[in-house]
Image (cartoon, rainbow, N blue to C red; front, side, top):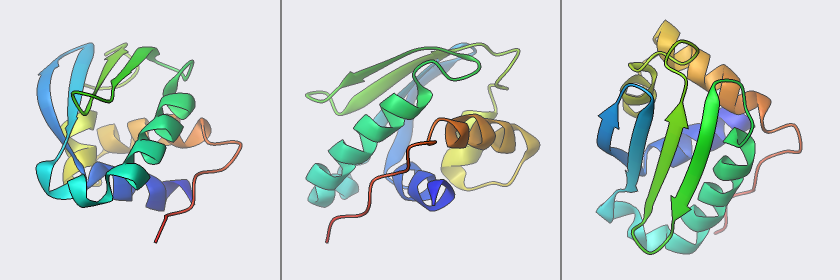
Length: 113
């Protein structure tokens, strides 16, 4: 289920830098124990967001354990990113969740043990 996948991934991310239209997400240090599984999750998120409504570009940097996303703030409210990562059920987070979920038409990766 995409919602569970996104919640799992969001729990491992923090916002390193954010201005309206551009957000850089970093892998939380505590999440490094599951780095291989999280790398697969990050790749799936990249595929889901690339070309999605309101997303201009997605760039993964595995060595820095970061992902930079350029987005249209008129489509995705800037507050959506922190709200989603905090697990807050705001309208902004719902918009981002809807957009991200739409990109998972082919399914989401299963969690590795």
